Length: 462
Image (cartoon, rainbow, N blue to C red; front, side, top):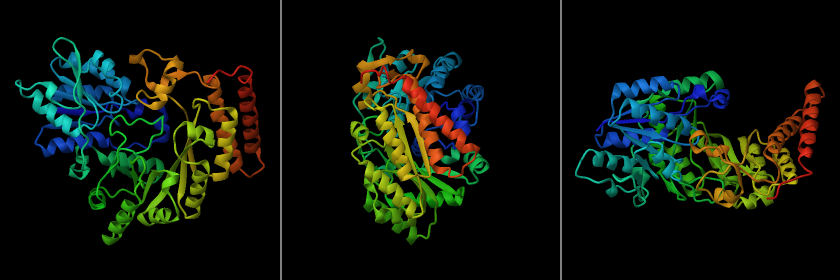
């Protein structure tokens, strides 16, 4: 059985990401490819990031796979649906297998729109068993844990949930040699002056933030031994020698004991790296910040989501605004760049909450921050809470969860101007020169506040 692995993401079709230009290799697919290689299964990876839809179709035609396996998330969903349709015409007998975070809570729809099998949860072991099962007419799909499909009568079947891999140290390193890694590094170098690669040290997240999806790895925490991580870093440096690394873990220093052992391993082997990572304020203190810096961290992203404690509590973040603020300040004092994430439009958020967020950003003064409007991902606690308040849910096959809207404190347009207000206020706060730029920022702030007030007379119910 020949397996064709792809993800259907095209950078040239993503205007927002083209402005940012920080693409990373598809580690999930590369882990599956490596696992299949280890078990002597023929597979081909087509990394579509720098390619085109036409080139992807041409490669499928050329490879003539028995199994077309596609990673699927919010960003790739629409192109994946198009790819299913094209592949059905091109190769009528190919088995189309989808995996990734978007399939878990959209089983019926993905099967309806042409997928043969859905992989729910981690993909390595499931994909291997699927290959063996599909290659043996005597075997039945019902024996494969962690999948959904339709039987010969069209009845939807979801098999028993697959047990998570207990020791992820057993997994081989991602098969980075299957794709053009240097292309990613060159893009980074051209746009940011330094090349960068991504690396994973853990799976799962033990926290309970209501808006966050745990569809693939679950609410778990499984970590690779520091020795294994450093082995991979050494290999990456010898093979590609990137300038920086991005640790993709949800909370890099969730375990202080692990971080100490990681630092010790780096020092023992005289490995020098430069990296950025994401963490939580409640997992930071003076010692941890010092250890991060010693390990080579130059930028740490500290989740905030809001400057209002009331909103943070609604999110079940289990952290205080003061903790976030203090750790951003302490990180900067220690010489780290700091970044944070902000979300507006969460259920129950008021204009006063947004003003508290602006105050929070000014007081903490991170080097970087991002602002998004909250949207409900199926399967999350947030989605379950607002399901009966949905006001806009376009046709499933023509939209993603990002297009779902619900009754908030104010109409949807309010939050667009709230984001502009936040951006202008923070830019003004950082701009201490009395010039035309300052005047323009003051005008933008006035206009944003004025438009936001237009929505205040008739706020919607929570």
